[in-house]
Length: 141
Image 1 (cartoon, helix red, strand yellow):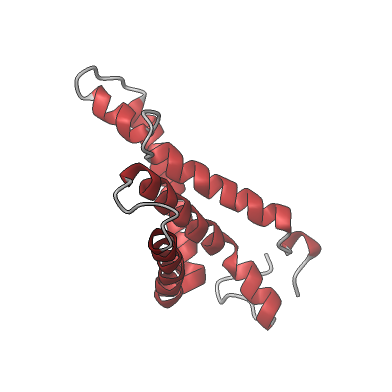
Image 2 (image 1 turned 90 degrees about the vertical axis):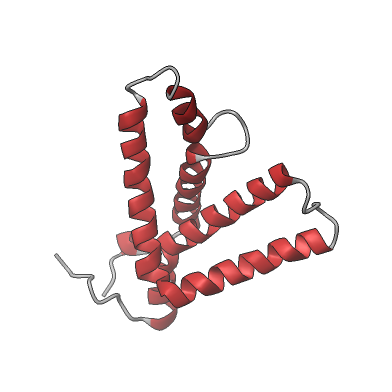
C-alpha cells in the first residue's frame, strides 16, 4: 500500500519537470550561457571549477536517465520521442517554426528532452496510480 507521501501531485510533477529543464538547459543551450560553452572556453583559459560542475551535471543526467529508462523502458522511451518528435514535425510542417531556424529548433528539442526526462521521473507514480501495481524494486523499508 502506498503512503500519502508517495503520491504524485501536480506540484511534484512540475518540480521534476523544472529540474529536468534546468539540467538540459544548463548543460547546453543555444545562448552563450551553458556548461558546454563554459567548458569550451576553458580549453584556452582553464578554470578548475569546470570539473566539479561537470561531475554534478553528470550525476544529474545519470539520475534522470536511469529513472527514465527504468520507468518508461526502451519501448516507452521510443514512444515518448516518437510523440514529441511528431509534434515537432507538425510545428515545422504548419510553418510555426522554420526547419532552417536552428536556434528555435534547438530550443524546442531541448524542451522535448526535458519533457521526456520529467515524464520519466514521474511515470512510475502515474503507472502505479493507473494500474495499482508497484515497481519490482520498490520495498517498504
